Image (tube, rainbow, N blue to C red; front, top):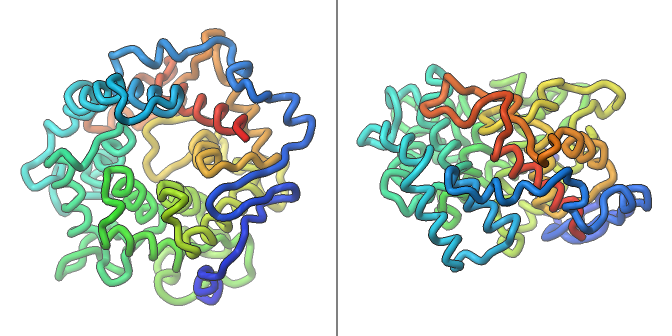
Amino acid sequence: MGEAADRGSDVEFRLSKGCRGSGDFLQCERPPEVRSAITADWKSALNADPTDWLLEPSNPSVRYFTLTEILELPAGHPQVREARAALMAEGAVPKILAKQSPGGYWGKPEDFYVRSKYRGTVWQLLVLAELGATAEDERVRRTCEFILARSQHAASGGFAYESAVHGGGDPDKILPCLTGNMVWALLRLGYSGDERVVRGVEWITRYQRFDDGIEQPPEGWPYDEHEKCWGTHTCHMGVVKALKALAEIPPERRPETVKNTITQAAEHLLKHYIFRRSHNPRPVAMQEWLLFGFPLMWNTDTLEILGILTRLGCHDPRMREAVDVVIARQNPQGRWRLQSTFNGRFVVNIERAGHPSKWITLHALRVIKGFCAG
């Protein structure tokens, strides 16, 4: 608890030797061998340019993000407005929303997480956020309100996998990965100004830990309830989802507590070289982290972690091997395959395993473009 309580101090990012900057933006001087391997012309790392493929209207969500994040067209551009409208009317988003119950949930309202993987309400909210849906749609807003009412523990801001008897989330069943995911999804869907989401952010900055082999696990609430989440090694997924949520907050709106937690979370991931062990970096920590998937639920992979770090502006040399792994996975057409999926357990399947994936390709381009920037 002492470490968490100290996160409000005014600190600068110190992610590695050669890095500089404030909590608003990371900057790292890359060594010559990195600069020569990946030049400022990020498309030189591609076997071919897949942009036209990503812009095809068959996947309006991918088209929207390609226009805004790869081509960097402004929100008011006619093509962007058209794509945003299309993703709410065509493709996976309307198919998911068509199966929603009037109360804003899927399946049984009480089974929003555990017994409904991956068809329950928590999982649909995550997928909708990933696909670019917006809470301007009443159906999406109903789901956001359902999760806030059923899953969030109002006093602390954390999100639980079961409701308490008298309503709200059960404080003894709060999970860090679930809290990170729900805060991220709600921010993404347009709830950034909501006081309930602000409390969710505060839960992350107050309670999220980054332990890496301490002698004694943390004690007290919320650490006593879930040893796999905390223990002597903080769960990697919890760290990733917490950082993903905080990265969604615009730099100019991040208080010092958020900046400080971003610092600690980023360093935790970097000292693991994204997918290795920190104390013995030779072995791969989890082979699953090298299989690229979409959409990710509680789980993570190398591509997601790199995407979060590059969004924060990090160009740390410890990312270089993981970026090389991403670049090596493309086919001759500059496209990446979907290697990991929960298809068959979703309400609506997303692409096909083993086939070229517009989503994985989009995420790979984000990473390569972001790593080359600055």
